[in-house]
Image (cartoon, rainbow, N blue to C red; front, side, top):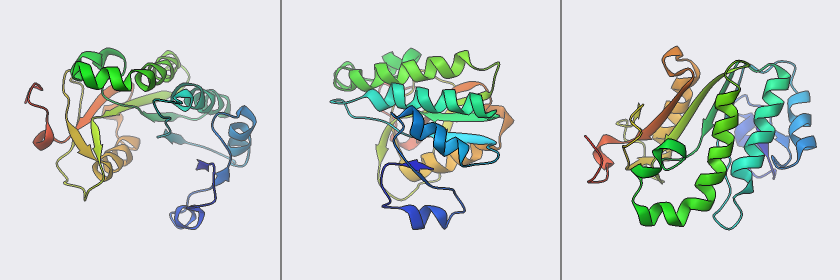
Length: 188
């Protein structure tokens, strides 16, 4: 795991993960993180910026994607957001306008990852509105680009972990929502 602070190092290392201190916007930090590992089978990127500073959503993820290709990573999971790319119309217009700076940057990273499908398998997971609550166990991944709703962070994490080991998700762009938390305009 590449992180800017030492804040969660013990917790992350307790999960048998390797922690490298650095910033995804710094190409050298990203390269060092990959160089510190002998072999990397898969990468999951959940990094993002803010509407005021969305650069991590594009350049940070692009730096990680490029380093993963160079390292020979076999599978890359990029977590972005409903409203990115061809799911733009799924979000209400006022929500899209607020998130537009971030969503446009996320799209740049998604595009690079899809263009790299000949070099490594990809999965793009676009969660709806994230809730910090207990997981419900109801969340789903769907190829439906028109769905919009909410989902808990814990449910997203579980589905990302499952996608790592599922060939059914390979080279797909998937929306992630809890069917019990759909927006009224979303299909059921």
